Length: 434
Image (cartoon, rainbow, N blue to C red; front, top):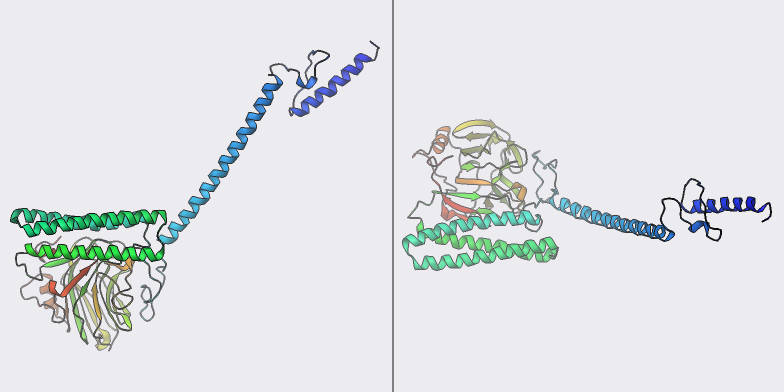
């Protein structure tokens, strides 16, 4: 071998090692002996595997990285989809009209008539779970009444009652299937607005029909109960559960409105009653919604009342008013709690309107808003076309035999029609209070 050959081989080895080092990233140079005819880049390093093993490891790592990248992309897509669905649910559940909206004329925090109304309790807008819960409670209430009828029929062995009971039970079962089917459709997004409206009308119609059949059946066990010994119950905050007074109001230059009321709804008990006339939806309204105090509205003008009635106890409330100077007085449990004036002075209450219990009207006889619906129990709703004296109001609150009945609207089952699952129960004031 020539004298310069070892030196040349040494430098060639160094260059080859550098090339191999660049292939494996940062390394350190070590000395090892290799056969003359072996490729330096494929030779084994101390504590290293074969070239095939290293290539296999690199391929496995590369495949793992690709799989993780694909997993991350899938997770990002899932997060994006869930965020979109969450935003859609939030937009459906948020009120369209904020509590800061004000009315014209009266300065009340109530929303203006005809404005976009909140329909949180509307079947077509409520989340599916909430819809199922609300309708489930209504159906359970009807089932409870049906069970009471079953006990009555067993005692009296009435074949006709048993036959009607079977029909009603079948109707309840069918209605439950409709509700479940509709909730499933809502969750899957299969219903378009037109179909939703039709389904809602169908379910509400069935509820009203079912309630009427049960009410007719219950008449057989009333044992000649006086027509005024009853209460109305509104268990849910919806925009389809209400009662309508068959008789309208005459023109009145003074009035007194009295009733027994029980509610633990919060925030706000809602609207115990509302009277609308053509051209004025807020002719006469009693309302407590949101965190606002209870208010009486006359011709869309507002007075705040000192009532505290959302404690789950029965209370008797009475409000008097005269057109002269718009003077009003408010009584709770027979005691005057507040008074004022300049409430729609010299404006007589207009006749030929619609009187509704349990809902606030935005249009004549309709335009109900779930957020302003009454939740609780109501009884002995009476209206007079004069201002009652403090003594007369005290007699009403203490159930005295001298208590007068309303000469314009008297509390009687024959004067009331109920809709949407509101119920009637036996009630005797001052005997079953609280």
